[in-house]
Length: 329
Ligand code: MTE
Image 1 (cartoon, rainbow, N blue to C red):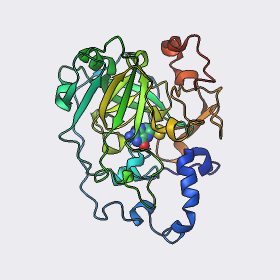
Image 2 (image 1 turned 180 degrees about the vertical axis):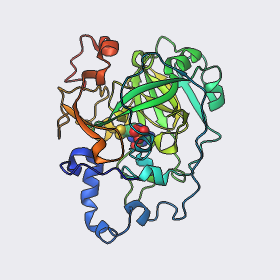
Image 3 (image 1 turned 90 degrees about the vertical axis):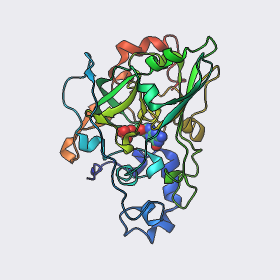
């Protein structure tokens, strides 16, 4: 299913600059291929024969008491309108191109300033964790948003197990780097070769320890689909969606702020903090409003005012007391 882009929305308004500029410069070469459904498929990155999709398994979880009330984005829209550049540039491409992405076995390296560094299998990570369903908004920097029933556990629960040391001030995250399994990482005609793979993100340790910060393993009661970041992704509901890094294989506790993919490739546009803030515009578009996607049709797109910290100000504004949020955007 393809979610149609509202007619008044220009590509330049919704696409991160690196992607947008690259698309423009490739327009000529792309013309010859425009009749095919997907440029990246036409470029031969992705298997023409579709691999079988990995079936999502049911999860056992309890409900979190403070879930959002109200309408949720349909499962179909959450799983077919994605940003996952390792699997293509178009919103509909990750669902197609990540089909069959193998997530078993999976392990996560935890290293740096902590008492128990090591390589942990996903089973180790999940052992004894109480999975909870938490309905959080995901607000993309491109000015659209969704309301998603995530299933996961607080990142704090994992960090407490490895016991961060006193020098652990930041945490760096990395996505899997495997161009054979993530063809968007291959340098190529339509590759985001300007991005420095693997995808990297970071948080301050107090942000990472905040009870709202989730490591998600599922949504809509089932394990995550590959396009949503299987088997393990971050969800930081008060920050723009690009902070919510997918398919995590490495966490590093460190003293210095980590480099992140977007702050490295476009530092004037995507800051380290990336707190949702209707008063601080993106250099090329306003952040005052958002298009809330509820279903896959145009009727499901409602334009609403963006809330400071994506509506979670009461819980998290204190983390930034005394900071200039215009400078630390
Ligand atoms: N993680 C990785 N590894 N690669 C990506 O391209 N895109 C980010 C974030 N995490 C991205 C990523 C962006 S820009 C957004 S808005 C969210 O994932 C989208 O999450 P969703 O597709 O589950 O809605």
